[in-house]
Image (cartoon, rainbow, N blue to C red; front, side, top):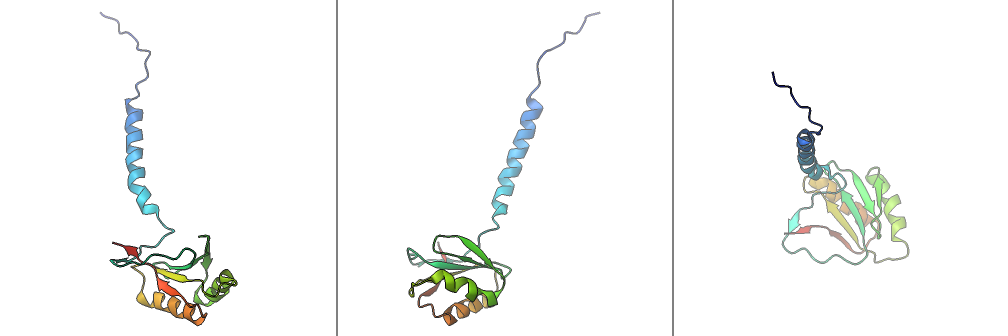
Amino acid sequence: MRQRRLKNEINVVPYIDVMLVLLVIFMVATPMMTTGSVDLPTSGTAPQKPDKYLKVQVKQDGALTVFDADGKPTKVKGLKNLKDTLLPLRGDDEKMPVLVAGDKETQYKNVIEVLDEVKKMRFERVGLETSSK
């Protein structure tokens, strides 16, 4: 009877299979993890954004986030607290523009309420942010 020889090698094929499965899982899951941004509606004639502006982001569930001129986010607890967050960010610049970025899946009334509240704060330049096609 013939005796079997022992191999002193490590079989790496199962490890490669596991790594490929993990790679596919991460490639599929990564685009779904964009929780910080809103899905803006598109417009064929989206104008150029100003150099410095304040931004109020209305998410799909109506949650508000205010971004200062440097892009630093601040979460706002309801429409009543928007004034307390937005006015100090304006500072001395009376003509600071404000862009309202409403998610395209949010209710229309959420965006209109934010626009109305910003207009009540006497901002001269208020606009809607869209993405270009």
